[in-house]
Length: 210
Ligand code: PRP
Image (cartoon, rainbow, N blue to C red; front, side, top):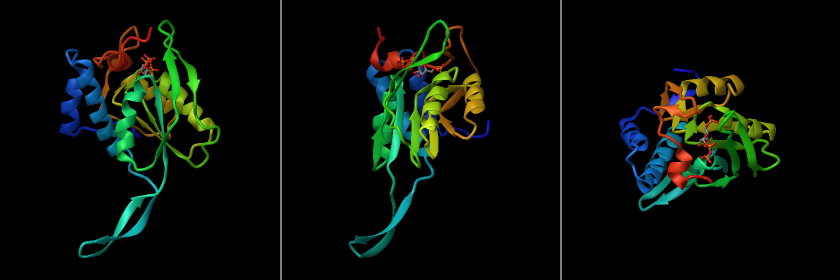
């Protein structure tokens, strides 16, 4: 597999992926499976966090325990990335969320920034960029461009379904940003949809945008 790409092949993930892809999965079940998969993929992806040792009194003694000691900045790419945020927040004790709104032009497939709420200075920060779909890769490249331009120290991308061309493009622009996902599909259709993919994640989570 491509260096820097983690595909979480655990059966618990793959079982949920079947429901994510299924066109008969209704919106409530789709939101739930996005939630479950986001937690599982993010758990596998986020291996490095600053920690501290603390003494914890148990009913029978004192244990030396490890606690997370940093605040992770989550950057969901709107709209679909929003569906991943509660699950990843649920894994981590300290998070902040900065939204980036990107929308693909349906004719050119180029993504355009319509919202940028990233902090001006991300020096030293650990950032998790989340978007269920890595299709052409344009949105994730652009979001990571913004994050990198503010000086983030560690960036991790968490997706659910990626495409081979999307991964290749992303690796060209951000070779040092690891990507985690549940599966990598072979290609895209003429509309830039991942095939077989799941359709439009934003629409399945939130309904049509217009
Ligand atoms: C979709 C999807 C990703 C992006 C992936 O969003 O949710 O953000 O396209 O495509 P790319 O890798 O080719 O850039 P869309 O632009 O449809 O917006 P939405 O989430 O608001 O529906």
